[in-house]
Image (tube, rainbow, N blue to C red):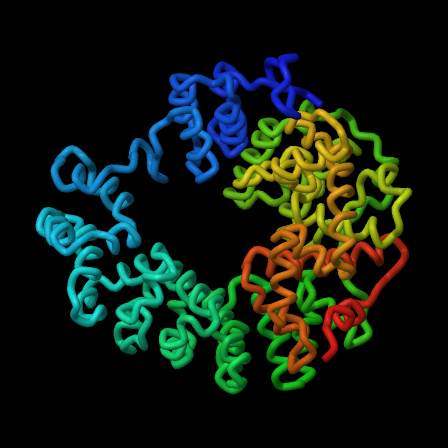
Length: 549
């Protein structure tokens, strides 16, 4: 694996490589660079002055970076540049603090802890500003009148209080109440904040029942995001209001932007009405997902016909091999920028031509990544790289690993996520450290960009998960959301035998990322089982996850 610039023989815990300020200063601003800045800030040898210089180069400030910066003596920062945490006295007395910084300092929780005099002083100081946000959010806590009256002209602030406040604030009768229909219609206009608001209200069950009662009276609207429409539809199903839910699914079927959204709506229209015409709609979809696979199985059709895989791939002899190191995150960044240029210009044929520069064993992930985009996802890739590494495993385990890897990284070895999950199997740094310790190894985090090493660690972790969970669906939830999350989810009553199960549980997993992730991995698993010569029915896999009474 290509290491960057300087390798030191000095060992830090399990990780031997020293990251230097000179090194990170040469990298382009990106999540990849932030990962190296985070490593630099975690090093005990990094001085306060060096930490300050590094932190100024951050592309995206995250809690993880803030915490690491604070360890090196840096002033605690909020999530905007050059905005430390100020005392209330500073906010009241100083005039050199920007309104944006004050806004970020005065969180709902912090305002709720102020006394009446402090709130009154803040309202007085900021009420005549061009941006009245600070005074208005303080008024919401200060005044005893109806919250809808206080914020009638500025309803977005209600959403901010709910989304940024803690459970105590949200549960207060002032905010946790049935909302006036006109005020609710105003909230809908802030579609993405409203989406998060609806998700939170529904996720916490009965805690916000008064608000939920208001939400369940809503009709589908183009002002709502598709996610919001689905949240409300599934809550209506769970509440036994199938007729009202149908109107939401029909609305999404008609207006949904993405194919998978329309597929999801058609699937639920089939479940609720038992009308087979919706299965036929799914048969015409070009997307490969659990909804279309289920419909194809019901109608006796093959899983999919638009699959890209390396048939004869390894016999292909390229004219030349591109000078791109797939294990170098900054080389991958260059490729992504080129892909984005073609996509922006809608030059899909040129994308297909560009893909063929990478048609070789070493760049297999990049090749298929570009190819899918050249085909505008009408053809979907299911490569099976590193067969030699996996050949000793059962077909079931091979299919599971491929299913996870496809969803995690599309087989790109140097992918770094926003939370710094690393490599093809997207392994978190804390997990790398734990596995290395258990294996008695010293390792650099960069070693996770080596796909073979990354697979080693992923297989080790998957073996742990398989001791607790049998279904590929539950293993997927645990791989993405954690073992504790998955255990709690199962203990909460999900997947118990009942009406619309296991589909209703699959659609209402509280953690949205794991909800989407599990469905995709399950579909991948079915496809890979077929490609590896040991097919399995999605119907069978779904039957196996239902917990009998």
